Amino acid sequence: MSQTAEANIKKINGIDLYYEWHPCRPEAKTVVLIHGFLASTFCFRKLVPLLQKDYNILSVDVPPFGKSGKAKSFLYTYKNIASTLITLLKDLEIKKPILAGHSMGGQHSLNMIALEPDIAEKVVLLCSSGYLKPPGRLLSIGSRLPLFHLAVKRWLVRSGGVKDNLKLVVHDQSLIDEDMLRGYMQPFLNKEMFHGLGKFIHDREGDLPPEALKQLDVPSLLIWGEHDRVTPVAVGKRLQGDLKNSELVVLKNTGHLIMEEEPEKVYELMRDFIG
View 1 (cartoon, rainbow, N blue to C red):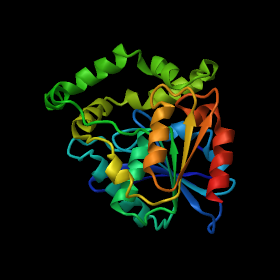
View 2: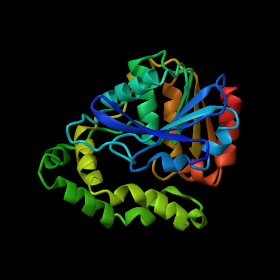
View 3: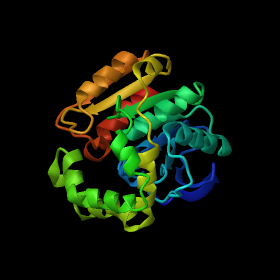
View 4: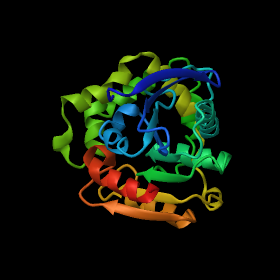
């Protein structure tokens, strides 16, 4: 986090929302950074200093991730998370920002616009998820069981833990160092994380369907990694076809975590798009 950043927690809709404010200047536009599944504000650590040269930056930990609340009483649907983030923007008196969502954060951004079309001036989708269905019936039933959080923890361990998951999302494996491992591991040291994650899995609906995407009319920049194995370029091409006012740029020799691999290129593309 930069020296000028302000870290705060605000209770919205019954959940603690952790956010970081990185000021540029009062009259500058504001970019809202929204991370994806299993991530946190940490994933934008290389992009923030670049964007902050031109824009005010609000980076939010989407519950139950990062330092935000993990309450089992919170409804972790796309719609409720979108409503919660919109309320945060209004409480902070941030008007018409640029929303920038990575992976599942792209769906959160699109859901915010679907819920309130005038909430943002533009949207940037960084390897956004798209067209995912809701959890299957067995998973939905299993997620109601008292010890489901232990199954979630076991799943994460069996999938190779943080290191192997980073290998999946980063094309250039040499970028995975101790700082990166510590940063992505830190949220999982909180045992409440797995309770919140279990409830999140239970509550999640499917992604916005094509008919809903086609109703959105906000200028959209889609930035993708050529070698994204989580949300392949085909997803980006389909989203571009469904979003009225959109442009797709594919970065070569890059994976899913494009903000870590190509922060300068992502910054330049965003700067040219935002103006």
